Length: 427
Image (spheres, rainbow, N blue to C red):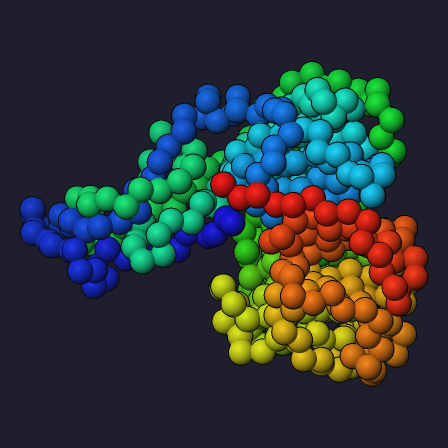
């Protein structure tokens, strides 16, 4: 996954550091560090292509649109699955999108991040996708993660996009008054190509994202978490002329986005934020709900928001919980009840049903009619397999976990039926 590279001071105590003063203004420092692996911009921005379907999948974000299931393979691209028959899904293509983590689809246009850029891909013909637009440097400070045990060496943004890191011994000179240029930055601009038009059978409007999404479409605007603390609004009315129209910073680490009507709900590591979308190009915060420091996806129905909190990875929290939050007064959300969980990740809702991916404890299904008695109204539990995220839609539950892509018929929620499984093979 992409991580925000922290700025390290070279005067920190690293075992490999040796210093010698070269003059009164500069010091020379030798230390072991993550050094950038560059790909020239010309090569990077010509790298998108479609290949044959692949067996190997590393589970990431999922997205559903018009009987197609799109599965992100973090850092590599997107698997395209024909899901017209959920009992027999067919992998039909792989879109190579370097550095990809998130996606959203509006009509026949797939929007995806590619390291520092946002790309627009016409998928009127899923077997012949065409890149039709690219907004450069929308995500300038988001870089691949290196070895967590070593600091990061200086980068030179003129050399290209950073696609990885090598651990090496480096020697650098820096001003004793402090170096302030380690972060990879750039100005926003865009390039365009000719659009192909909507000649396929794609319906208008957006598809359905899983609860881990950091992209969210609203009318002709795409909201993206470009940094953990920065929400950007990209106008995508013309996929060939995408432009950033707004940028909002918050004092939190944002993780997930969920839209309901004219409100945007943002899961952060310290709580849930609510933004008003009365002006779709200028989201504005109207409320917040605070919780313990934790990873935090959120889904919402008309009266309640459902938030899962978990330990592990970067989530410095000692509890695994489902929290039910009353949002009937949208500017004054409050906690109704917390429920213990094993290690909850993604979740989904459909009517009275609540689906929770509880990590290695598997899939749990609840009737959420009574927010004060959700655990006692468990309808099903598929235990002992790892689960990550879900999309419930029209009686079919699409689930991704470390073991594969699973689909269930939940027309009878007390008797879920496994329709299919696509095994996951990792390289």
